[in-house]
Length: 260
Image 1 (cartoon, one colour):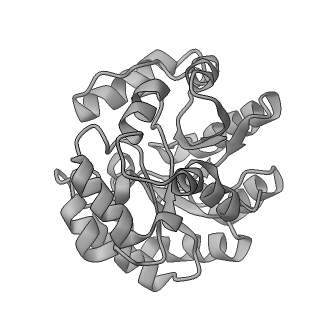
Image 2 (spheres, rainbow, N blue to C red; image 1 turned 90 degrees about the vertical axis):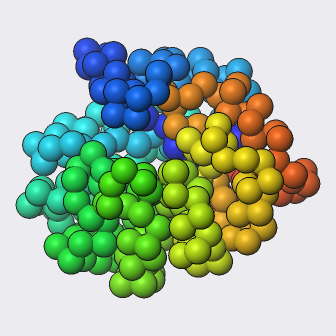
């Protein structure tokens, strides 16, 4: 059984444009456009049974439409587990967080590099407090040495300010900043996912990070549509893990986190 904890999907009319903009941002070609149908097709090739689908609102005005799309897709596809999105300039955050909780979404996704704010900014504290009260986990894009929005030290600051907020730092805790992830986050009560990492991080370093941080705090993620599932599984299979540890990362840790 596999739960893919890091997937992105887009409405059909904007999927090609949206995925291209992400590829341009990272100067890396996307494997797919990001339609729900493509996600299900790609994941079926390796036996994914559940997909955590994550929206990102790059503008405040996109928050509610993005959340509506995810709610609709989860109603249509029982394989999907939806997270909502927020934006630092969105004012009606308390009501919207209650709305997405009532609609069955299981957490919130933020990408502060796209949204251009520091993930530990004080203006977000009230948002994080409400998420904590509602038991909505937060998954964040973590790291990028080109920017100073979501690096491992900022993630640690966020965790220390909001220790009861369930926090998932994507990309082994810091895309392209894995040494800093080890320095600041290893051993902290923060989940990592495996997405958009194993293409670049040497296997020996990945194994070291898993041992240092704890296999019980890792989640399998593809970062679809940037990657295809077969390729991500092939890279994951290079890791030095027991069958039990693989099962933990593939689904048991996610089941515990999401109370499935």
